Length: 587
Ligand SMILES: Nc1nc2c(ncn2[C@@H]2O[C@H](COP(=O)(O)OP(=O)(O)OP(=O)(O)O)[C@@H](O)[C@H]2O)c(=O)[nH]1
Ligand SMILES: [Mg+2]
View 1 (tube, rainbow, N blue to C red):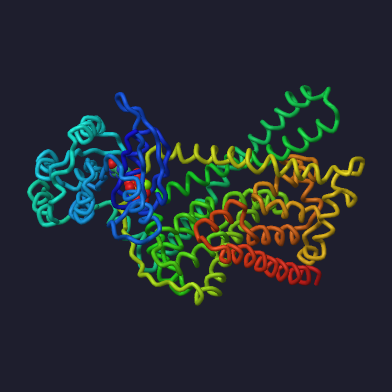
View 2 (cartoon, protein in one colour; view 1 turned 90 degrees about the vertical axis):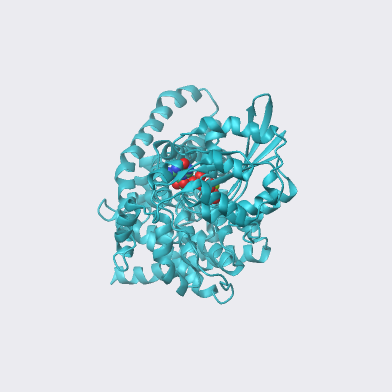
């Protein structure tokens, strides 16, 4: 089987080309460092099966950040049959060194001048056939995002693979490559992206930039909820119909215990969590828009000076924002940080980012205990506290994990996301949910069901049930925070995945969706709910996050710290809030 590797500088469109060629759905975004691990897909080409490998972006082969090491390791160990070198056609001169280094590897190569659309808009003309002759390797020019020029790639690949095309260019010096580029590339004296420059005048404004960014984020959250709420209600209604019209009649002849497990356990738990899927999909689409337009890179730039005070940098801030979706890719995204100190400090702060799984818990509790005017502000306050927890953590640990690297970030031009990209982003989230549902949620709710219904004959979730005993055992620790034994059980399972929190409450109370919400409103007051939300926000991240921290940090001691510190911080925060708030309210 032939191995073809996509190599190039960050943000040149390697993953976009990979997706277009193989039909895969690698994550794409207008941010240098979206791909941090290798991804492969097999494809039948002509009479043979070819394995395509999408690699992280690199600046040169001597790079030592974790994502760059993935590339150098791959090139050395696997030695692909062909390198497809993906270049940004409007910045060819910046990629000469890397081209030279890759040619010297003496592996057949095809150079793809991508983003032909942008080069054209900038007034750059490239005689790519002439360039191909001068360099001695096949060259094609296309636009992976919009699909123009894709028809050239097949013949070019064949030429590169068949002609036993050891690049005769292996011996070309940097100087010679530069001369070839100069001869075949005509660009205007000054390159300008008029749209990007005009927009940046506002968005990167020295004192308006930050407020604008905060307003944009606030608007995103508001829009997600305004659009998401009816969708969420619709889902809840669908699930209720499914239960009443299909499942209940179907299972009516089954033994009561099994009916209980399947309907009140698995179905209630799963459908309550699934009700949030539309909201989460919307949230990711908006985060995707921010990422794909290039605004994320601006956020890094705007926040850098502030983050430096906490021992972090602008890129760490972007990881915190990415963590609002899911902490796992954000933790992996820290691979682009070259300083190990900065990387570990960022990894310690990322798990406080209010991820979409926690968002479900908060949307649920705010809807149950606060009115429609208060709810958005309650949620916004949790986002601010999420940031504050990250900052406090950074301040506490910055002298232990010292940043030894300067902040360098390429500012990409603004780009319009395509409908296709947005669609896949949403689709991936649905997939992600199904994956987590089958892996954690079903197992979690079944376990909670068993704990709340056994020993047989006891009242569900009563003090006599196994769950009741567990709750009592946790009570001395959690009752000073206003957290009831039932909520403690949910928290305990939240260690595995935060989605189980709501799922297990559905099982504990034997209710789903809106009915569960109403019941919550009667069982606890708003202070308890807020204290519970604070605890859920800050305490230990989920199992996947812990596993990622372990594999990324390669340190058991660091992983332990990243579990213990948040639990301690969560307890202190909730305790302080609850004890003070109870006193104020009772005055
Ligand atoms: N205008 C234009 N934009 C493109 C083209 N190809 C990719 N893009 C955009 O460029 C950005 C980067 O694309 P990716 O495919 O994520 O780039 P990558 O090389 O995989 O980036 P890293 O994984 O970070 O190294 C995204 O916003 C894409 O939509 C193209 O042909 N034209
Ligand atoms: Mg990529």
